[in-house]
Length: 360
Image (tube, rainbow, N blue to C red; front, top):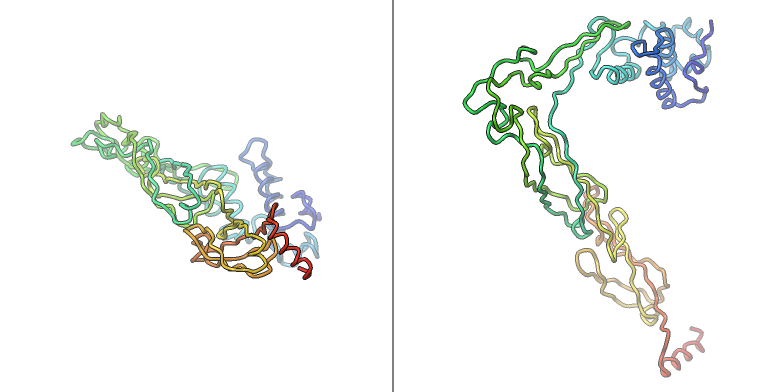
């Protein structure tokens, strides 16, 4: 019987590859036989449809011939080529789903298709906020934080046992630090490796637990941590400091510092460029000249062309923010505001009237 693979996945023929993948993942989760309310027949049907529609060549032939394109040598069914090991994009998607179901990695189907390994638990990551001025973001700084966190026990140095005492092999995992679990499914046997809950993955147990940390190998301490925030960093960026998070027996997590940059009273930042305004008198706008201006790292000289109009943007090249991506610095743009005096002297008024007669 003719199969409508698009209908099986709840899609229209013009669906994109991303639409096909999303629909497949949703339905595969819903109908997986190992889940409550799962449907083995429907699950196989969904996988068959996805195997065809996710492959450009097979999809083109299916669009031309329908599911009868199997007879053209295009598809060998649910158990055919592309479904087992090395099944390309399809294999990666089903592996992702199995990871979400079972928490491990998978390398194919059939007996013993697993071998996935759960990473050993390390300490938690820590996230902090750091506020900078725009000037500090421009130049970069060394920032110091004092954090109360779990660190390696100062008494047992993380060994978990009293100093001078011995450790014994963990009886639950036989010193491997991992325990192998096998689960039988309709698709074969699934094997995964999980961190031993008794020894925490190190393979040994302290005969006499450390009095200070009670055998955990860690204790809360206040640690002074100094790290570099690079020049040119942007608002909202993260700085990662490896190994400065919470400590656990299998290693420490990382410290993440999210950067917030205060609003500047003068400058506006757009990526690596800076913007500000300058006000010049009408005479300078007419005659032009050179003006001293404020930039992020001091002062600069800006050429004012004769006859400039109010609202014009002038650029000082290389006077913006540090740009770690491109190297060097961005530019500084100045919006010129021509100031018209509200009151003028009699002499100035006469001169302006004279200019007016000249057509200026």
